[in-house]
Image 1 (cartoon, rainbow, N blue to C red):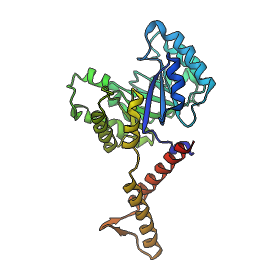
Image 2: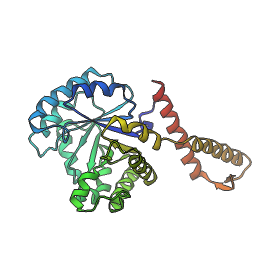
Image 3: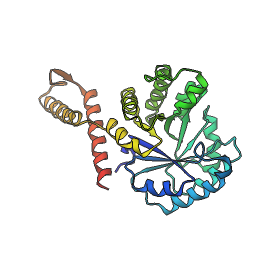
Image 4: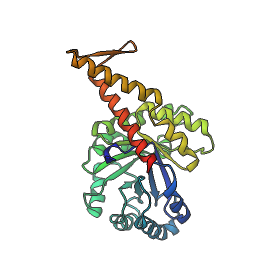
Length: 286
C-alpha cells in the first residue's frame, strides 16, 4: 500500500509500560498505534517503560499498523533519553507533546535527525494559534488534537456538542489540509459510551479529520466505521467518475449524476473516497 494513502480512522493509545498491551496491539484492528511514554506512564516507571517499548518495537509484528511513539516533552527529565532511545527503534513517527512553535520540532530534530517523521500534539492555545507554521514544518506529517489539555487551558465547559472547541478543531484541520498532512481528532474519555463516541467520531469526520485517537480497544469498531467511506459513498463516487469521464469523451466539461452537477473537483473527491476504500480493503486482507 502507498504509505501516503494509509488510513488513520483509528489511532489507539497503548501505554509503553504494559507488555501485555504491547503484545495484544499486534492483533487489534487499529489503523495506527500511539505507544505512549508520556501521560500513560508514571514518573517512576518511565525509564523501564522506555526499555520495554524499544524491545517491543524491535521485535516487530505490528503489520500494517502505523507505529507512533509519544515521547515525553524535551523540557522534562525524560524527553531527551526518550528521543535518543526511540529514534532507531523502528517507529514510523515520533509524537512530540507540548509543542507551541516550530522551534520545538527543531529541538527534536537535533536529537533524532531529519529523516524520521514527527507528529505533534496540538494541546495549547499557543499551538493552535501557530498551527499553520507547525504543520508546515518540513518534518511534520501529522497533527493530533489534544482536546483534554485544550479544555483545561481554555477554561471552557465540557459539552456533548464540543461547541467551545470548534474554533480550535477547525484551525487544526485547516492547518493540516494546507500542509497536506494527517489530522487526528482528540480522545473520547467515556470509553463505555458508544453513542457518545459515535457522535464525536461523526462530528470529527464532518469537520475533516482523518480519524480519532482512542483510549480503549472497545472504541475501535465505532471509529473505523465512522471514518470509512460508506457503501453508498463508494457507489456514488464510482458513478461520478464514470459519468465525468463519459462527458469529457464527448467534449463536455461537466456531467450530471442524480440531478447534481459533477465537475473536476467532485471527481477528485470521488477518487479520494475510492482510494481510501481500497486501502482499507488491503489492510483488512493482511
